Image (cartoon, rainbow, N blue to C red; front, side, top):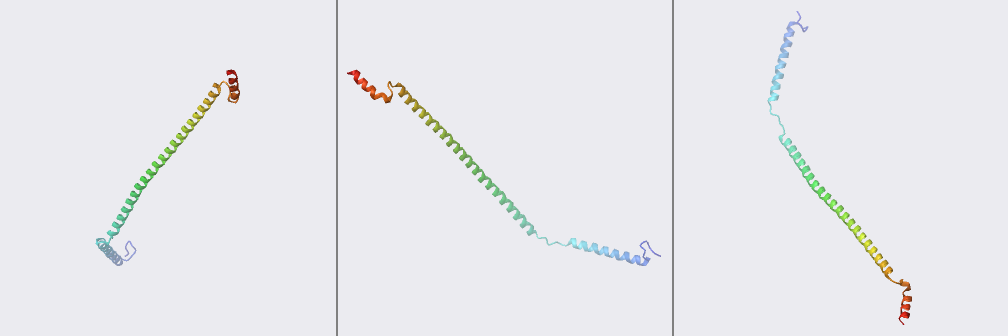
Length: 135
């Protein structure tokens, strides 16, 4: 008579026994494989962590130094711009003072020209007339 698998009954028991032996040997092999100590290179992981830590530390230090240098450069630029603006304001003040002085000199000349009785071109004639009047 045949079993559900389609094999004669004697062969079915042999196959079941072979599969059972195979299963127990696989379980025994798995237990042995998982029970063994694996040669994991802890130093390798530690060295990579150490190198990564140093690299990140160097990046952080470089970032701090770069930030400080950039801040110093920015302050120098601001001071340079402020000095240039101050110099421009001083030049404008000097130009205004020169213009005022020129205006004052011109007004003084006009005032002296207006206050004369005779224009300067006619002054020799006026002196001759003054000498004639005095005689």
